Image 1 (cartoon, helix red, strand yellow):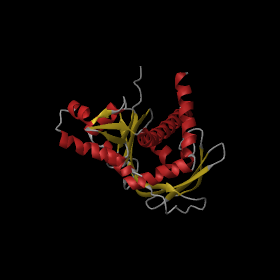
Image 2: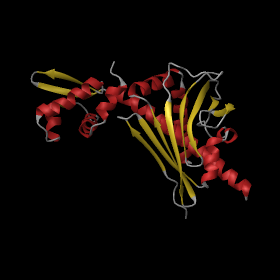
Image 3: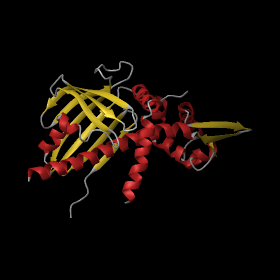
Image 4: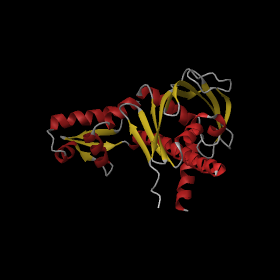
Length: 108
Length: 168
């Protein structure tokens, strides 16, 4: 099971985030993905390997073409946690804003 | 017309930190009090629909706040914030983590470090909180715990509630 450390490392790079965004539209071959990033295949393959190790994407070779697919569960789990944290803080802040309004009302 | 109050929520995945910035339409002393006096913390610290109760509070360098967040459907989440360095009314640093009802910190779960800074923005106050985990592994443990304890589903319900409230 790929861990969060791998996920974060994978997500820390702009090219890799762009690849994930592209794959969210559906599977694509490594060749197609590399061309869109104007990158030589060997250096692009390094990004693909990082993404595969993170568990964020999977790939399958058929003949000479390697096709990549997004594995959404992993990404969803990570993003959902941060979204929840954001929601917690939004709710806290809303509570505090209301409290501050009340406290200031008491003073005047 | 008053401009909207600022709210930023930034995630640095590589450093395993969250930076939360929020502006309040109040003087800095009052905003500071709300963060550092238990009777005020109890009134806002838990996200809705949870409520907060303080078991003990000793706000000083090396002191701590022992609290519980109560879910109306039953579950209780005990927490303990250990204060490291306090500089009224500018900044405090603390370690936040899960504890039990007696105040013993759960040694199996990593704690997050809070670095909270208060600054004047004209008549308003900006609060910046940088929450850091020691490592991505530490964050992973906290995430797994949240999911196991059903915190996640409570927050999902909250998400839905907020969507409804925002539409109104």
